[in-house]
Image 1 (spheres, one colour):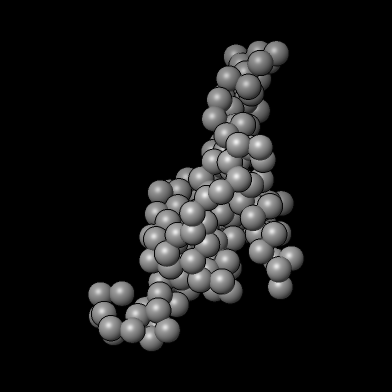
Image 2 (tube, rainbow, N blue to C red):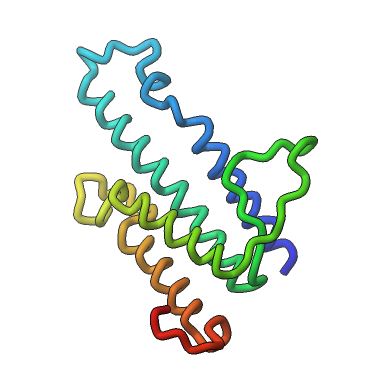
Length: 157
């Protein structure tokens, strides 16, 4: 099972790298392109970039949901780490991870496609959608409210 730990953190690193790299995506997409005559394709690319960025956040939430399910508290990595300088990151508590996962989903759910099958992008089916993001959130909150992680039986959870 240790390979899963490494694989999930590699996914988190890839998502963080994409989010860092695509911060200036609008300018990058406009390079060497006529944004006036090719405005339709340019706008599609801008929309796709927004979806990709939101999906990267949801992917991170998914990876963390799987990690806390297996390991409990793990370190939260919110940026692309450099191997030589950022070797030690403190472990977060289970509650901090639940809050992080919920905030990742809540902050990015508006930018997700509602349903790929019913949109004009049916060839993109299988990507993260609003429903899959909310399902991850529901499962994480359900586990957090279970007696295993809610020993005091706090009904607000």
